[in-house]
Image 1: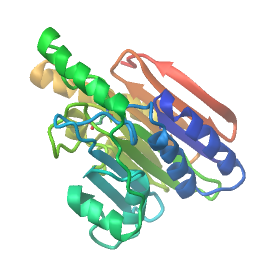
Image 2 (image 1 turned 90 degrees about the vertical axis):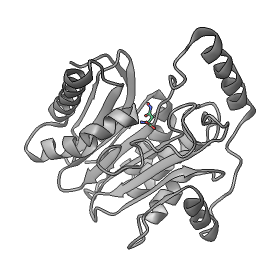
Image 3 (image 1 turned 180 degrees about the vertical axis):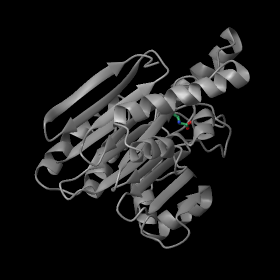
Image 4 (image 1 turned 90 degrees about the horizontal axis):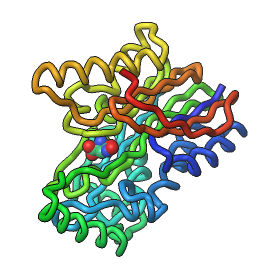
Length: 291
Ligand code: SD4
């Protein structure tokens, strides 16, 4: 059995290509990287990679992570600037014994040493969004942070290996140096080939409070179907946050177990995701608050 599941509609084209390679026996390590690179490289997806929305200083700082579910090795970069494919740098870091999570200049230095492609990730289109948002914040008292999505994926190959990965420009107008859940193991992503994997998207500051990706894998380990695990984890965290301070940020998750069964849950009214397995052709779904 093989399968791949990804957050948001933007993942569809990359997921379709990776589905073909998984069908032909390709590894989940390569398939997940390829699918995420596809999203990173497309300039019109404004919350991942090239064309990603900038921070409050109009700089594109990117976060990405990769986890190998066989070895539990992880690699992640945070607040990295001027490199084309953060996911590949994160994947490369997962092969290191130590220093697997690098931020900002340290991550850039590593990427340079390893020969990764340098690229100015700030597009003219992103500058237009930035200037428009500055105006909107002043005129309409709009929340500066709205409008952000992370691509997260879980992938299973025919050899039974699970991987999880994420890539994002984080919150639009975030403070310089701000790091969300996406490169944080257990919060933005987790994969264990013995069980399953999960990734999250939404407000990183809240997703981290529930270590939500690890929690989903833990629930699957306890015997829950991925759908139940996702729903329990989102509902629990949403409830806990509301009990404590009346509101919860956006929380959306996807998961797949090592049989290729998958699940998804959200507390928002419009979360799209894409999925393909040996038995299901690539499909995009839109779900509403799964409470
Ligand atoms: C973050 N979780 O940086 C990311 C952003 C995101 O939907 O996924 N938005 O907090």
